[in-house]
Amino acid sequence: MALDHWPTIVLLRRVPDSRDRAALERAVQRAVASAAPANSVLRYAGANAAGMTYYEWRLGKVTCHIGQCSARFRDVGGVIDASLGRVVEWHDRDAGVPNNPVLRAAWDAHAAWTYVDALDTAPDCLPPLLRLSAELIDDDCLLVWDCQGIRPPRGPMALLAPAVRTALASGRWPD
Image 1 (cartoon, rainbow, N blue to C red):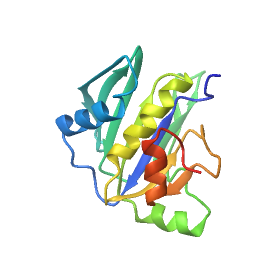
Image 2: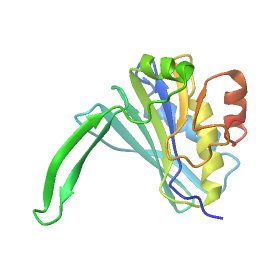
Image 3: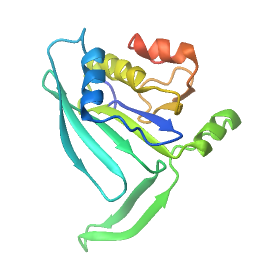
């Protein structure tokens, strides 16, 4: 059964992720070792003025990404008036802010974020992305967030306890 959304996993961080392309590529190689066929060659795909750097790789025929952002996670978007053919209203706000006070404290402490995604809804894309998320967790990670809401058995966010990292490393969302 296909997923409802493209899987997107976000790691909220205290500081920006400083890993370079080669280190990220090694993480992809470890995460997809059991998922064949995969092309774990990471290609620089660009950057933007908001502090985001993008990398691209392939999982079979599926395009996947790693993004590193040196700013807080924000929902930046606009309302398009089709009759005018342009954006008529912009917004820039915190997105996904949890109500749980413990999760909210972790959210409030984040200053940067990293994400991994797959541009496909095939369920076999999810385990390698979860394993890659585990590979990217370090001491500066505060919170892991399934921002598309694809696997929320107990909610879409989890603090980074050892059991969470173990679950992610095994290719499943933490219980």
